[in-house]
Amino acid sequence: MNKIYDIGCWVSTEDGYGQILYNRPLYIEEFTLASKDSIIGEFDKIIYICKVFCGFEGKIKSRFLIKSYTSVQDMSKKDEKIVQKIKAENPEEYKNYITEEGKEFLLRQVFLTFKVDNNQVNEVIEKISNVNRQLKPSFTFKEFAKEFAKNDMPFSYQEFYKKGQVYNMSEVVTLRFDSILYATKKKESIFNNVVAIKI
Image (tube, rainbow, N blue to C red; front, side):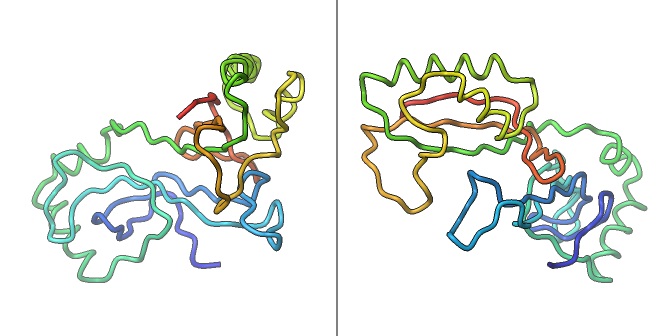
């Protein structure tokens, strides 16, 4: 595993220099199994949520970026000097950076697609809406599966198309799971919403 950066660390991102607000370790879950060799509960990757202060040339962001990254790097001595110079010359801007809440509503979305007859689409959308209402405001995929099982669905929650599988767009419905700020609990993703959509 590569180096894990702690919350508050200054790092270099693909958009400039900033601090880590959250580090979210993601693990293999039932819906992310990539191959037969994958193991549920096995470490997958870390998502870093960072607030970017300035670009590589030292220009302060007019609106502080809050973005997610799968990779960040240590700042070099040169990078650190650039940031220290900006802090010293622009104390008010730096104060704003430290105290300002991010305006971005950073959302992770997981999409699972299932085969459904056209005449069942509206029924599925309605039933998933009911499942969502029964779930707590924050729930795991396992908790979703338990609630899902209480409804008479035309498919199993495990029958989603895996990555790379080909399907007919006119014969599917997609479940979209939303997770605010890539939240996790132990080795499970935390979701805040699930909806069925017909594309």
